[in-house]
Amino acid sequence: MTFLLPRTARVSRRLVACVQMRHMSRDVGQPTHFSHPELLATGELLPGMHREEFAERRSNLMRGIAETHSGMTEDKHLVIIPGAHIKYMSENIPYRFHQNTDFLYLTGCLEPDAVLLLETTNRQALPEHKAVLYVRTRDPHKEMWDGPRPGPDGALELTGVDEAYTLSNLEQHLESKYSAEGYIVWYGTQNVVHPEHNEQIIKGLTSSPESRVTSVHNPSTLIAKQRLIKSPSELALMRKAGEITSEAFRTVLGATRPGVNEGQLESVFEHSVKMAGAQWMSYPPVVAGGTSANCLHYIANNRVLKSGELVLMDAGCEYYGYVSDVTRTWPVSGEFSAAQKELYEVVRMVKEECTQLCRKGVTLSYLHSVAVDLLAGQMKAVGILSDRISTSKLVQIINELYPHHVGHYLGMDTHDTLSVDRNTELVPGMVVTIEPGLYIPALYANGALTNGFKELQGTGIRLEDDVLITEQGPEILNKNCPDSVEEVTKLIAQGSS
Ligand SMILES: [Mn+2]
Image (cartoon, rainbow, N blue to C red; front, side, top):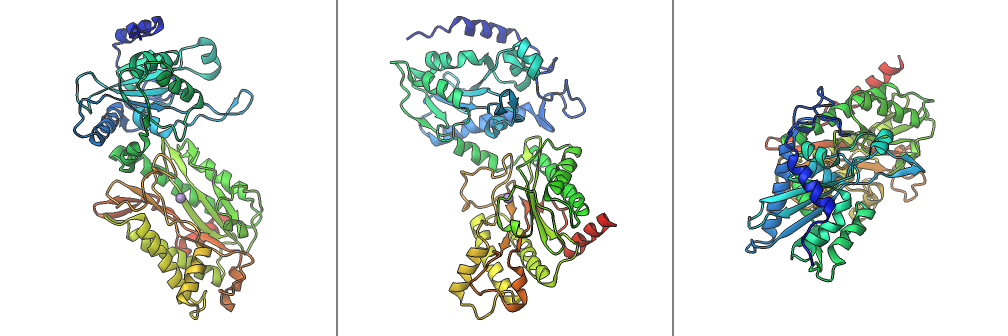
């Protein structure tokens, strides 16, 4: 087994050593102070987020790894985090590139096909480590078609990692520098981010007869724990995503009238968030008129909205890597019927109560149980469900009418940090959604609805806010998104006047 690097690697190492510039002096395919001075200060990789913050996150991850191996400080660790690859709609037609969020969190780098390695530095205890990036090679022909690439030198200047190489070195380096050296390897094999790199990584780590890699640990749980608590700069981006989304909902309310297609409201929302500076919608929005609201992930958005029905819209935007996720439901005509208003107020009250409970020490699981109890109690109290229904029957009915959870963590992904249990106590810096709903099937046959409320068959209502936990209590990131009957109806009326 040789430790001599292949010739190409030696060349790029020398190249790396020559690079002393600390500021970008050319376009590298993602916004920098050089290309977007109006958006980014020197050294920032995302607005308000300096590359030092990314270095700190890498150190925190290595500290977390050290803590999982207390007492074995001599262990050598190797963490491998691949970036996303470009996906294609059809031959040569790419979807817009979306970076793997763990990779973005640790590097601030928006380059497709890149790989990050973090390795123990010789004879130094964690969190001391070396960060190495592998990126696509520069290619004038391809860059003419697809835009500039950083290449190893650009990646180094951009992110401030310790070393950078072209991807052609990845497999060979894994084999020659790491596989026989007894590193404890941290790499996510469960949800493969990049199938092609995955093959190279597995081959590089295991194909040599001298390889000592027999198992890998998944780093994603440790990264999720870190991502769960947002830094001030992350919160600034999330507040902005919440503000943009609130404003977009106000615009969509004003554009609502009978005869408008669901897809047109989607388009009003998308236009509004992009005009305000967001890059994406967080997910294909749900714009569901009438009974379509009972399909929780309805995204066909192709029906004409009719007077008398409600429209449910679940939509959010992504602002430089951080997302919002908001839901409102309102009457197409601008006026709730008496029964619709009762049901709406039940859901709104439950959202309000659960939001106020978003404080240090409570859990999403607890909030969900509160939501279930409140929904059940209120449905009886206002007379939508008969007060003669037994408690066990009531539990069954609420499970039917409210089939999802009250919330999830929110951050770089809409369903953020999924490996974090919902029994985790909330602490300041965490962001959760609070989204109670009631969905009454069109053919709801179990006789639960009282006579005055039969018209609610086929009605679905959900209200969702994004809530930051602070020392002082909950902060609603989309606080300008209206939910009172008065304000919602006023905005619809203003739009149609
Ligand atoms: Mn949600």
